[in-house]
Image (cartoon, rainbow, N blue to C red; front, side, top):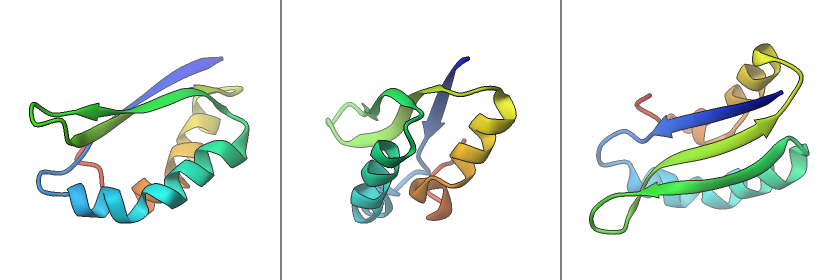
Length: 79
């Protein structure tokens, strides 16, 4: 089942994103669940959110995956 994870960063959280990016990318690569992923960019070209396409068995698995993302653990997302 493909599931789109759409996350918007908290305002002013670019440094949280940058400081956790390496761990986030490593997590994306290590789980085997990610078909594609990338950041959203604001008008200034700065990262401000994420789109991750997951291939998992169900929504519960996707929610568990998202809860373990280093960005989530760093409290980056507003929604």
